[in-house]
Picture 1 (cartoon, rainbow, N blue to C red):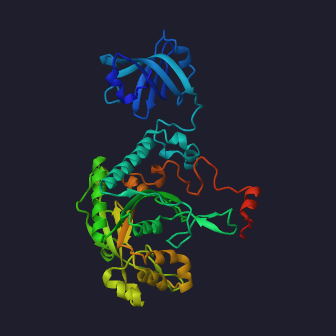
Picture 2: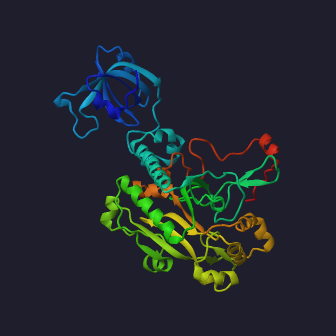
Picture 3: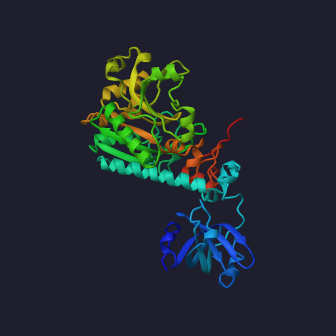
Length: 464
């Protein structure tokens, strides 16, 4: 018999059905056994009666076992209706019960909020943690958000394009995770901090409107809203100015979150220059909501723009504040090209903040070789080092590079706003621990000697 999902059972009252799922609650009353069974669509009470051939199996079947039930959907008598409970007016009378996967006693209660369970235990048994109602909602909401954004972008003539995971180590703001090459001993790939250079090259390639759901990997200090890995909706557009990018992102975010049932505090999104934000809020990430709005889950979006392009390094030189591939504001281009007034140069960078988090960041890019070269000159790069680092970009820009710009929207940050969660790990399926250990699997861990030999790597212990 074809499987019926639990959310559709009310359409089959009086009929025989097959349901499959997990046992959330088990109540053995001697002459009959009750199971609350859930699948990905909902939950329903089932009952194994005295004369059912399934009773003997039911008495030995444990909570969280995966089961298949053949039975009849019945209306509950009026006195047995559970008001306010999903499917509280129906139940399934079990005719046969097959245990598809028996379960040991779980290490914590899955039917309760698992946020108070020890983090190490939760991540060790993440596959069980993800069964909990809260985590199911969070991960499924994440999927709905991504789907809605993807559909929006397709409707706006964007093309989804994947870019490489093995790439070159380049300065983009954080430390790289590197991968040794077996075919080229002593040389290394880097995992992408973002698809920054590739998406700009796609603009040179004439793709005009690109996006991807991109994985970004950065070896940076861990905190509540930051991990080694995150996902972003990566967008790049040709023949645009700052207003064009901001307008399409604002429209997409508003349409998407409202479709998901959330309220946007203010439309269009208010805008603040970096200087205004620092003067008014003391930070470039701020929360515009009132206390009452915080309780009701309102989304307070705002733009911050006109950022300083450079900041001083501890050694007294200059480095970029956001992205070395950004363009200066047009009125500051001449200063950049001539190395003047560095501390006053502003960049065409824009960040989208929401409820105290930076949820997206982007810029109009440098598309002329002279501008990009001047950025690296300002940071103290020699001509030789510039050529080694970004020579391929400078070369590409000599072949009719269009003006272009884009943005990356942090999926985890957005979901933290939508769910009200305080930690990134609550909206990721398999996050890292605070100590940088993988969930479920045991990484990082040493490589075997054979693997090190194949890669031509020798490990030296770090001096304490």
